[in-house]
Image (tube, rainbow, N blue to C red):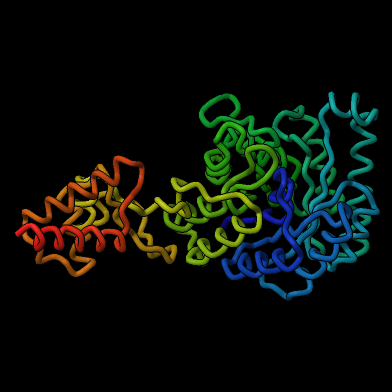
Length: 385
C-alpha cells in the first residue's frame, strides 16, 4: 500500500509568483485531509514567520493526515518545526562530491556527521517523530555516496529515505530508469539489514514526473510526492489528481476520495493565479467534453466508446461541445437536452449550419446559446412563410 505525500503548500509555493494566505492554506489542507492524502507537507517554517504560523495552524487541526514540515540539516530548523507541533519532518542535505566541494566546502564524512547529528537531535526531542532524509539531487549524485549517507541516516533514526529527481533527469526504459534506481537502492538497504520506507520526489522538467513516479511504484516505493496542478520549481512535480486517479482506478488503491479533487483544484488555481489548462487530464474543462461528430454520436450511445474514465468518479459530468466539428447526431443529442427534439430535419440542418458558423469563429456553442439559435431559426421559419 503506497502512501501519497502532498506538497502543494511547500513545493507548490516554490512556483514563481505563488503564495497562499494562511486561511487559504488551511482551506487547502482541509481538502487534502478530506481527500485522504497520507502526509500534508505544510511548509518550511524557517522561511517566514507567516509560513511558521500557517504550519502550526494546520498541525493543530487534528487531521487524520500526518502534517509535516520541511527542514535543512540544522538544529534551528528542527526547533522551529517542532514548535509547530508537526509529526513529520523532512530533512535534506546534498551528498554529491561536486556540490560538497564547490558549494559547502566539506567532505562526505563531515556532511554525514551533520545529517546524522540533526536526525538524532530531532528524535531526542520527539521520539515518535517521523523523519525523512533526502539526499538532494539524489539520482545525479554518486550512488555510493547516496547509499552511505542514507544508511547512516537510517541508523541515526530516519524512518524514510526520499529519492529526489530534483531536475527531472530520469527517463523510463533507459539507463536512467527510476525503476532500476529504486530497486537497486532497496537491495543495498536490505544487504545492510536496513528497511526504511523509500519515497520518491519527481520533477517534471521532461514531462515525465508521473511516468517516473509510476516506475518507482512498480519497483515497490512506499511514498510518492505530488502537488495540486503539479505546482513546484520550474515545471513542477507530479500532478496529484493524475497520480491519485491512476493509483485508484488502474492499481486498485482505492483509499482516496477523488471526488474532492475538482474542488481542490479550483481553490488552488484561484489563489495561486495558475489557470487549469482546458485540456488538462482529470481536472481540465475539456477532460470529459466530446466534440467531433463521430465521437459525440458514439459517446451519446455508450460513453466508454471514447472514455476510459468515468467522470462521475470525480464528481464531474461529461459534456458535448458544439462547433464546426459537430455532426447531426451530436446536434440531435443537444436538442434533446434543451427540449427541442421534435424539430424537423430541414430546420435541424439550419441550426447545424449556424452552429458550424459560430465554431469557425473559434467558439463553442453551449446549451443556452443553442436555445437562442433554435429560437432564431424558428422565428425565421415563421417570418419567411
